[in-house]
Image (cartoon, rainbow, N blue to C red; front, side, top):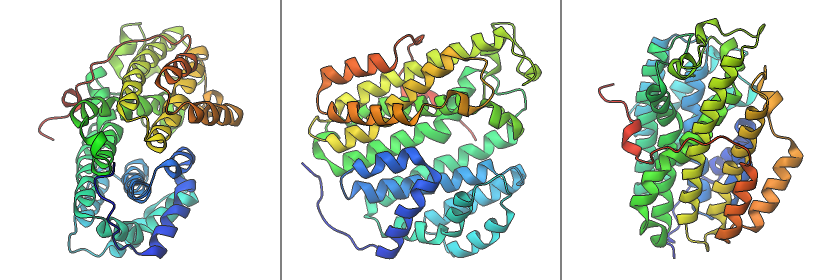
Length: 361
């Protein structure tokens, strides 16, 4: 049962535009978001594009940490309804983007005013939910940019906090949107909220592991040093020219931790009423593809690019078909996930969301 079926005015041209932007900045979400019922489809698409704008600012290598902080502060204020025209920010940021950014990412920045216009057209509670997510991301990301090192993050706790600021908070935001949409989901809000960070963190850890070498070429490393030190490997010595089995041992330990988060995420999905097949598919397809990616990482820790461990289009199609058909059947979903995660090491992770936050940024 939906909490509200009220239709609200939107700039229809802008809504169509954001739908066209999505495939260029995320093939995965372009596949999963259309499974959502309206009005969730529009609000989640908008939320994802807002997060991608914040990510684009963070990822741009031509910007100093100080400039990234300034752009994040301005973007956060604009999303919250500040006085600065969104077009001014877009006009200043767009020319500063380097060729390392794709044409689609540059177009997203150019279209920033339209994206924000949709945010401001959403119902008040949805808009507030998106504002909070953007605020937390834009406060957390600059801290890591100012303190980042080429030899990685300090420890596993800092790694978890980084994953919270770039993805775990998105899990919280999605949960709040789901609860606003459905009173049945809202009844389980407390338990879903506790698991929501794992949902985002598991996906983000998988992406960090997949993109280790691409990040390295940009001068960044988001791996935790202490995990690799316990196997006798110094991330400061990481080199594409030579594979060290101790590095592979560290990768497998992080695969086990990401797997633990994905296991929590499966519990999250099973808490969503089986009747909400579209929401379950939205969650499940990303979850299953992450598990399959972890399989490839675990089998080939000597990889040298994300393409080497990327799952095939055939595997994507099989995932969409099998998990799509089983979306409303809990026992079958558990068996399918066990198959997708077969052979993976597992380190169980506490699902308490609060432990991942930084204090005193």
